[in-house]
Image 1: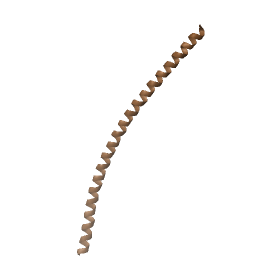
Image 2 (image 1 turned 60 degrees about the vertical axis):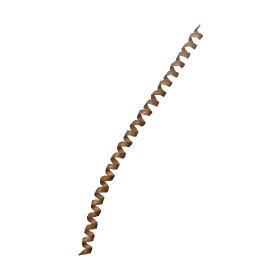
Image 3 (image 1 turned 180 degrees about the vertical axis):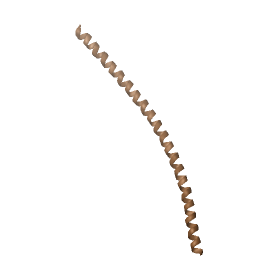
Image 4 (image 1 turned 135 degrees about the vertical axis):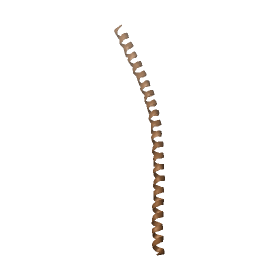
Length: 78
């Protein structure tokens, strides 16, 4: 009788362990999906900020270029 109870307890432990593994796997998959969504959002924000910075840098670079070119042209025409 003790052997039957022992086997029954071992079987229950195995079932609980299997259920826990399944839950952990599902939780990991859900967490991974959530993390990938957060990563996509961060990439989008970084891309937008970089694009804005590039546009602003290009604008000031263009103004600086006009300033230098006009100074050079003025020096050549003197």
